[in-house]
Image (cartoon, rainbow, N blue to C red):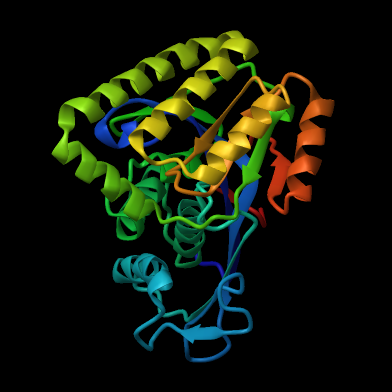
Length: 323
């Protein structure tokens, strides 16, 4: 069905266990969070196609028929061109993309934007994309941005909920873990996922046995974490988070500030803490068994001029916001 106005959103994510190793076909556990990217699309009243990304370029409109766009919009242009190639629609879109998800923080902002845009623009063009097709194109978009993505970000953003992801295969993972106990702290240190993934790849090529040993230990943590999550064993989950962080430090993808945040969280009796995502900056996630203590930590981190919040998990993946 051809429509003239659509709005779709898709969630960000946290990786609870297994980042970096997941790129090398080891398992990882991720969950969608209640921060979302939103793509709003309507038929343009002009004979031009317009793209607006106010979070990056306030008050600036881009004519999609003119090139080149800024480098950080290349992936969005890829989505738009890919969909236009397989449709006979002659409509000129006005596209506005916004996001509640901090950029370059390891929370899956690029995947959420891509997924929301693919779902929204395909609907606008009268195409009947299912979740599999949305996820497939979003993965191609992630490759443009990150070169060697695991596929986990686009998958969790498309389907939502909690998943165990391994070698391109997603398994829904239900676990007994109250989201009130997860604190996310953004170090506000920007990092580049592509560069960090490539740095690990170089280390792997130089010393495969050592890096594979780290990946093997992370793999075992993920297996134990799956059991602990299903059982709701908070103490075990926390211990595994701390162990996973140490292995990521050994891998060389942590950062001095992230380690300092983890140390403070340990002092505040967190059950466990770790970086989430590519590392090198971005966010730390922390597990508490006391909501009051979690809120105190949020305020403490804000006093240190860091972003901090208690996250809710999201069972919803990409969704239509108008219907």
